[in-house]
Length: 200
Length: 200
Image 1 (cartoon, chains in turn orange, purple):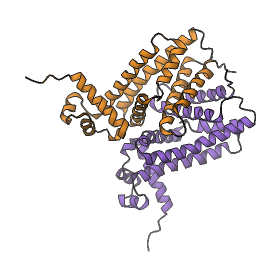
Image 2 (cartoon, chains in turn yellow, blue):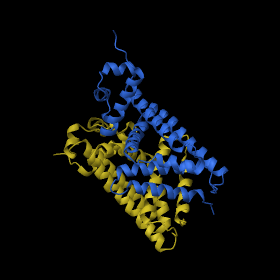
Image 3 (tube, one colour):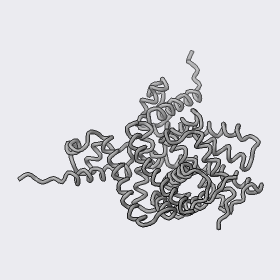
Image 4 (cartoon, rainbow over the protein chains, first blue to last red):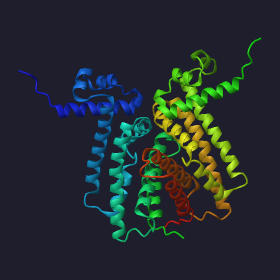
């Protein structure tokens, strides 16, 4: 009798193995061979599920984002406006082991995207979703009177996303200079600063 | 008669070639062979000046930072405090072709540094210099009464540096979403926001 294979499960296993290799050894080291070895499958099995290495890498990035979205949905739950925005932004910082792995994965894709248009396209689509979520929450905050800043929602969104990525990166690169508590404080202070800012 | 070789000049040529390869093809593609080809020298000539590929990459990063420091010294010249800080922060954004290349080089090193302690050490030392320059200018601004925020100089410094790197990255990754004029506006607005912010 042929063995029954759960293809979705196997696909997930390969992607999780790929993420582990990228996070541990760097994205350069994440060859198809290294990923197959980490997952405990042959190159042939991988070839059955993915056309090439880029497809594995991109699917691993999407899987990580899907996981983040599901976690965040549980966290914000009934919250809206500024409270939900704070949760979303904090959730994007590497404040625990899981999110540190996620940030390492993210940073690994940044430089890679600069050299590959195919990766860049997927990265842009994924980033657009996050951008739109932040913008929507800012819109809710403004409607609820929580946001008195006269800056455009687009500008506020870009400032928040830039700060989140900059702080996340710096915690990974400069662990002696910044700690997790610093990141949280700096982000929350920034939110307070900009939401009430009126130019002039 | 033996040919007279200008070793410093040759070293600079190799590093400039290395930067070109990293910026154009990505840091993965910057093999010793590719760098030698780009520079028009043999692998043997490169081996005479550098012990290995990492040394070439790190020297290229340092050369870029040295160039940035010299340019900045010319720009700020007699300025101090907030005026000099604004110049320094803007100079770190990819607002023209030259600085776009510099930012691409920088981003390429971020993920690489996460996988290599040797690269990470150099990156940290270089970043510490920039951090200290920003902090000094903030100190001057406070002494001159230009900075009324009650945040610590360390916190302000980290916020500025995070925003600069986040905005720079996002311009490269999302060129359809952000333009150079946006970056400049977002950064200057942020400076105005935080320098006058009093908590509470």
